[in-house]
Length: 444
Ligand code: AMP
Ligand code: GLY
Image (cartoon, rainbow, N blue to C red; front, side, top):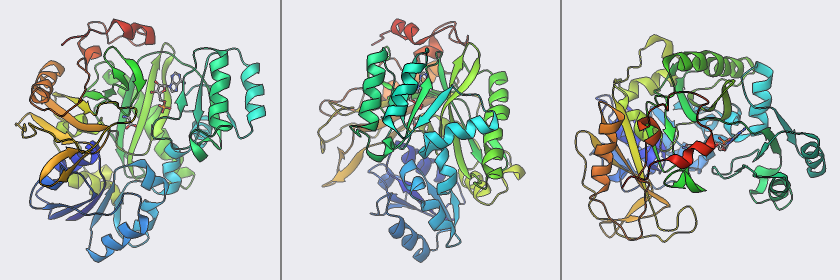
């Protein structure tokens, strides 16, 4: 099988790494990839085509007899890369533009959930700022304000008071801080409870759920500081009990896949449900139409099945015919970030100590490139270091052991990844509101 993988982050390095575990893989091209994907094995090559260059990717796939295209990030999905590749007859893992709207339009996603009875927070969608403001002043519950479109994880504002909520509406709808992502704004009821991500493979009919994951969005230990793309993750998250997963698989994941198909938007790829476990039960905060980053770096080490088989079965509409098997262990991932991230950061700094791969840890590259034979930093999130073992504790030990031998100037990382899984009592839904996170241990 000749495969084209689109993207350049830690998620794509993890996908490429797992694909190389398949005897079915003949050749893998990663567009554009990073220094990590460039160094995997002889079958893997980077190709310098940007992830959102739809025409360039379609031309490359056609001339190189690609048998399967795998699309990592949301931006090319929202641009219709899936549609363009499928129209040339190539098998694609990743939804078409219309199905990807479940992520790229929060307005569509909320209305879709309302139509199909999928549990989510109360909301309103607005195109007009005056109307949005009128609605805000008419309601008596705390809110979250969201730009409807794609905003690289930054378009969600959780205001602390009414003035901040008004300011958020202004930022999104008038100042256009997130550009056209703010054409529509969603005003949503603010819920409380722990969060968990449940991802599933789908071929448009069947869903095969993955181990539940938790990521760490804030930059600092104890869940403090600014929001990031994710500073670490672990799986399986013990808070998501088998009963909860069974409920979410039925009432959220399968209902969504069936609803999208019924609305003529068949979904092939990874459906990612970001959930909040409220005292009233799980509620969907958002859907993503792709693997998460860094969730992928903890989920794929636990996959025992052949990833080529699974992705191809999705793309060919026969996921129901195969089993997807997972190991009983756990995995954890620590993101090493550039100085200043999530704000502005320097680039091209040399990284030392990278050859730390063992049989139970792996250094996934997130933002790196090769410069004169040296691996240098090229992004805010530079590395995603994963470890795995029989439980979260041993997975964390292995990840942090590998982190300990890597250095680059100004690097920072969280020292408390997985703390929720290690704290006793973290398994009770609703018992820990956001305030509880200040009690996170600050281990060294
Ligand atoms: P989203 O991109 O929609 O998942 O939102 C990003 C983050 O904002 C989530 O992970 C939550 O921490 C927070 N958030 C989003 N929606 C809500 C909500 N309705 N209530 C409370 N927090 C929320
Ligand atoms: N880690 C969250 C995401 O990939 O959207």
